[in-house]
Amino acid sequence: MGRRVSASDVERTVSAVAERALHHGARTGLDVLVEAAVHLTETSGAALYAGRCRVAIAGLAPSALEHAHPLQLVKEGRTTLVLGEPCVDASDRQSLTRLAVLGSALLASLSREDEARCERTRLRQERARLMEQLAHRERAWSRAAHDLRTPLLVLQGYIDMMTKGMAGVLTPSMQRYLERMSRAAGEMNVRLQQRPTGEDAPVEDLRPLLSATFGPGRHRSVRLELPSEPVRLRASRTALALLVRTLERLLSGARASDVELRVNVPEGTQGWRVLVQARAERPLPERARETLERLARRCEARLSVQESPRLELTLLLPRLLV
Image (cartoon, rainbow, N blue to C red):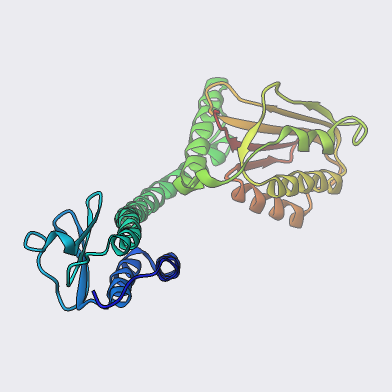
């Protein structure tokens, strides 16, 4: 050994190595630790082993672990610091043990860093795989929706024409069958508009908004019937509030009276139906109607309006079963 190792030197060295490891990682800390051992002892070289695996070296390579003199070795558990020349002084060996202890801690930290790095790599690969699957699912959904939307629109068009009597007088049975076909086609159209990625959208209850706008104290002429269970919809509260306010402006513009507003789940369907029936003195304002249609599409709803002989407005909204 070139010189004696003082306790103060060891303390400063341990602090410096720990700081470097904290800022630059355990791998850098191990390299700095071996370099510090060479500097403190003025030996020709030093190496650090984890078991029989050499993990760091500085200066001239000392003897291999199995061939080194016992006085060249400073052990701490499975961690061994090998010096270039034997260290005889007991106090020096005790001071160098501090470096071996720090080396053992840095090796444990390095193992954790390697595990975390592997986990990050695995998570990145998993994320890339999921993104690819999601993109494939979106493309498949878009193709299926496009292929089905056109025949559904044609079907709904013919149903509307027959309902208006363009194909002749309908019997009650025919009228009933057409209504069922219209509901089924409408529900399918709503489902096609729902994207698989919409599951992250917020869930809101429509009842408080309807009560605040059409409940007692606001519009005395409106008869409001709401279900006991929450009317959960996957849309933001802002979008639903705008939808309700637009509906209110639409009724005000038409000078609607004897207004009845009911929310229910019709038999044979899986969606909420908001049904508004009233007597209108004026035609529905065109701009308000266009705004309502646009908001209905944003909320993934289907809107139908009948103005004669009475105003009947229906919103079919997708129902969330929680």
